[in-house]
Image 1 (cartoon, one colour):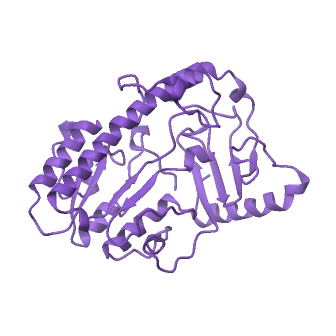
Image 2: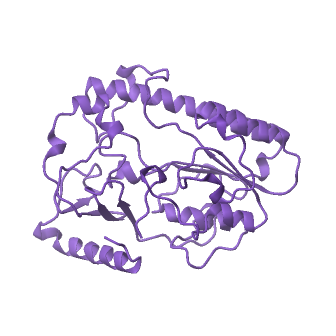
Image 3: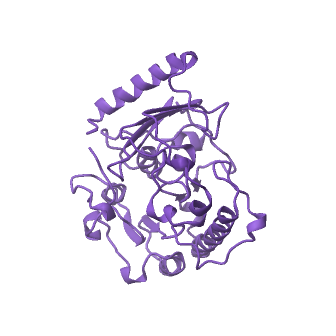
Length: 336
């Protein structure tokens, strides 16, 4: 069914098994540091320990709290620590900015003074967050736990810029996923299609914990450890956070098919992006009507600029992807 963020009025159903609970059942001591927005009452998540929540969600204080925990760690019981940072959410103005003239403007954005200044501040925010991650890794090394600890760094969506966050274009659904730990071949870059739903079973697999049979995801742990792995043919994505901008999509290695369920502008910008310097300089082209279907050939058009939906020479591709998407909606009882 439809599931939104708790800060938009939704709450994770108590019957849903979380990764935190599954690892707790497998014998791990579980802790939550910093940011979460799955539930209104954090106790519902089932962590064994909730270190001082008054620290907030900014990366500096949260990293210091995690480093202190690692320095004091003496127990041999395995632990799972979820660490959530408020960074790199907007606003960016309080972080030391890079030189706007030296930033690289992503191809999905217009190269304007506002976009450059926005990106320069964004880079400063990233640098601050990166230092906080470094502090945690240093503390892990000093504690002697690094060689036996799996570290996962990931994000929940693309950057808070137009055609990224809150869209189903690649800059919105392509998220960071870095892993370091025992058994992982260092330095490898995987190009296989992986979905967020794959993270849950993969981490249970890595921990030697049982993987529930009703999960939609599949473990990519074999891919990282050199064992046999069958990659996905396609991944699926959805947007639900604005009732006037409901979307679903399927993405293969070559094609992207997006189905828009509402009429409206091509881009419906979240409020943090709407008030940004990038938005100030981008004009109004994004306000033209959105099509009901979008189809992109990612090999020829990686920035998703030319909509091929409705073209006779792509009719079979469009029909095939539409059928696959419809089957998924029915299989998952999608309320749309």
